[in-house]
Image (tube, rainbow, N blue to C red; front, top):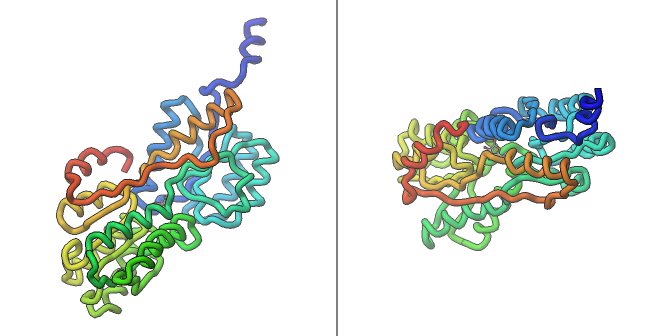
Length: 312
Ligand code: GYE
């Protein structure tokens, strides 16, 4: 009928948008929250979100993207596990005229033309915020730091190291004595911290731990306690994400500081895609999220209570 014909000729409404999200995996509490918040943000906007879990493997992400292209999705969200190796598959998406939005991690500059926008924090700044807190807290005292890095090759690991190192370079009393990847997981964070403690006189020569995420710090806290050390007192801690469990540790005096990262990357990404699809509005190349420092002075128990149940 005529009515059907009219309906079919209307431009796609939000209700008809389908977005494929190539998610990294579930390595951290923050990641789990991002996945769950993405689902609710899509539901709020009546967007169909298809999430593919890559179990930390770039090859799985590439496969998922190709499958999303074959399905003819309206947009692709990508949380790139590492920063390199995306050019070929993102060119395929571009040729298929499917806009790509990066979530929470970046890709190499060579891929800049291959995505519409990136919703991320300034991860160099996050590392600097962590470093500045430590510099301020120890005053001018000599402080040997051990560092738990994120996933090797991930933009956020490279950048969080870079930002922290920039502060170390300006403070002669700070020294990073050991630095190794803990792959953003609790189990690896604990394991690597155990080896740091052994190598550093049972932990006696460690003044502070800097972890690229809270989950690794939660593992490191466990390692310190098992070694008879008092995290948060004998050894200072600073990490990134602001997951509920780190607030629990801060409230218990076993951790000192965290830099907050919102798990809601999908909300702004969906708004950008919907405006782009409906009106052709081109978003800024970078939609930056906030990075705020929290310590024991911020009522950690209250923050823990308010964050619990928000997808973590
Ligand atoms: O900080 C960490 C996660 O890419 C920003 O990945 C994200 C990081 C986050 O595993 O916990």
